[in-house]
Amino acid sequence: MEHGHVTASAHTDPSDLVAEEARIKKANPNYIGVFVILGILTAIEIGLTTLFENTIGRVPILLALTVAKALLVVLYYMHLKFDSKLYAGFFGIGVFVFALPYVLSMVALLAPIQLVPVREAMPGAHGGEAAARPTRNPNAGPPLALNMEAGDYFFKPDAFDSNSGQIVRLTINNSGSVEHNFTLSGVTKDKSAEPWKDPNIAAEVVAHALAGSTGKGNFTAPAPGEYVFFCSIPGHAELGMHGTVVIK
Amino acid sequence: MAAVDKLEQGARRADEPLKGVLIPEHVETSTGLDHRKMVMWVFIASESIFFAALMATYLVNRDKVSLEEGPGHLDLAVASFNTFILLFSSLTMVLALQAIERAKKGRMIFLLVATAFWGLVFLGGQAFEYIELINNGITFDTNVWSSSFFALTGFHGTHVLIGIIWIVMLIIRALRGGISEHNHLAVELGGLYWHFVDLVWVVLFTIIYLI
Image (tube, rainbow over all chains, first blue to last red):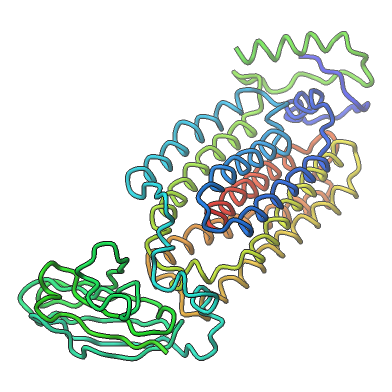
C-alpha cells in the first residue's frame, strides 16, 4: 500500500501507517474550540444544578448535556469522527449493546425514577442549611455508638439523646421471638406522635434483626427536635415498640 | 469491507499532491488496521462495561440513604474544579499528540508533563473529598451509598493513576528517543486511554454530583 507522507523519511515504523491514515483524514480539528465548548456545557450543567436543585425537570437536560460532552470527547479527542468505523463499531457495541442497556435496566428494575426526589422525604432534608450540611454543626461530636435491646414488644432504652449531624451507629439485639426493626420517623414528634399509623410519613428503617440475632445500621441525626422511633413491622408499634430520640 | 475501504481511500489519496516519499508496505492485517489500536478500542469497550456495572450499582443505591449519611457531604465546588481539570488535561493530551504529529517533540514532552500534572491535581482533589467524608465518619463500610461511591470513584481514581504512570512512561520513552513523528502510536494509545478516563468522569460527574 502506498501512502503520501508529510515529511521525507527513509525510516518509518510500519505500524505508524494506521495512525497516518487517520491523521491525514483529520480535518485538523480545533481542539481548543472543543475544550471551550466542553467548558461551557459543564458550566451550564453546574448552573442548572445550583439554580434548580431538586427540580426533577433538570435531569433530562443534564443527561442530554452529558451525552453531548461525551460525544465531543469521543468524536474529536479520541478521533472516532475521523478514524476507521471499525473502532467506532467496537466501542459502540460495548456502550450501546452492553453498558447502556445494563445501566438502564438495572435502574428501571431496582430504582425506578421517582417524580419526587426520594431524598426530599428523608429526615432533615428540609431542615435548612444546618440539617442539609451537618458538617457545619461544630457540636455534632464524634459518632455515637448505641446498643439497644429490641424485645417483644419494647425497646430498651426507649429514649436517647443525640446532636444534629452526629452519626449514630446503632446495634439492636433482638431478644424476642419474632423479627424487629428500628425505624426512625422523618418528621418531629409534634407533627406526628404515632408515625406508624400514617403511611404518608417518611420513615427510614435503620436496622433490623431476626429473632435472637443482632442487627446494625447507621443514621445521621436530623435537624434538632424530638423524633419518634418504632418497629415498623405491623402491629409491633401499637404493642409498645416505640421510643423517642431528642436531637439537640 | 473495512479493508476494501482502506484500499480505496489509499488509491484516492494517490491523486493528492505527495509532499514526501512513499512509505514501504506495513504489516498486513485482515482489517488493514493496526491491531494494537484495535485492541485498545476493544479494551475501552470492555472498560465501559466495567464502569457501567459500578455506575448501575451507584444509581440503584443512590437514594437509599439520607443526605446526612453521605451525599450531603459531597462538595459540588471541588467536583466542578476537578471536572475542569480533567477536561483541560484531555486538551493537553490531544495537543501532545498533535505536536508529535507535527514533529515538535519538545512541545509534546511539555504537554505530556502538563497532562500528568493535571492528573495529579485531579487526584489531589479526590483525596481532599475522601478526607472530608472520612472526617465526617463516612467510610467504605458506613452504608450502601458510601460503598457504592467509594467503589465507583476509587476505581476511576485508580484509572487516573494508571494513566499518569502511562504518561510518565511515554515521557521517558520520548526522552530516550523512542518516539518520533513517524513512530508515535504509543502516544495515540495512551491518549485514547486518558480520554476514556476523562469520558468516564464526564458521566460520573453528572450521576454523582448533578442529578
